Picture (spheres, rainbow, N blue to C red):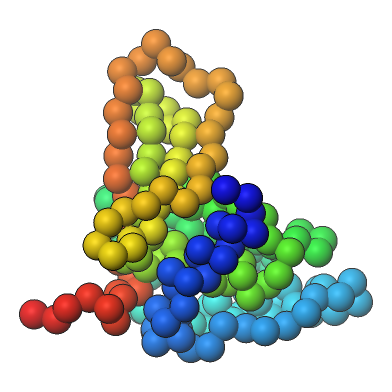
Length: 174
């Protein structure tokens, strides 16, 4: 699936989730002259939204922010701005975006219960990551990143990691 297809699928997956949990997605066009200001604005916007979750630990810099997992079954979610491009990463998985709003939606998606990261390991070495989205109660593979070199001789293990910081409004209550 190409990046536009993944992006559209991701947008459908998180459409109501983002608005109900963290407010309206940001809609800004980034030009070269406004880049430094928008970098700070995007990072500041994320920090502002994270204030709703005082138990969350994050590391913020001028052009990046990393949210640490809140449990041993979670994964790191990061957002960075470089030149006119945004990068979102979940542990070793990453994707580049040209539009800030799409990158912010992906970042929030990684913090939600609608996202799961399938991590392949050889021994303790993680080498492949598959982002999965929950659709109609099933987990569907959406995007994959992997390393070419890894210790292939070590025992293979697959781990499923999930952040449940943002809980979907679509889940039935108790």
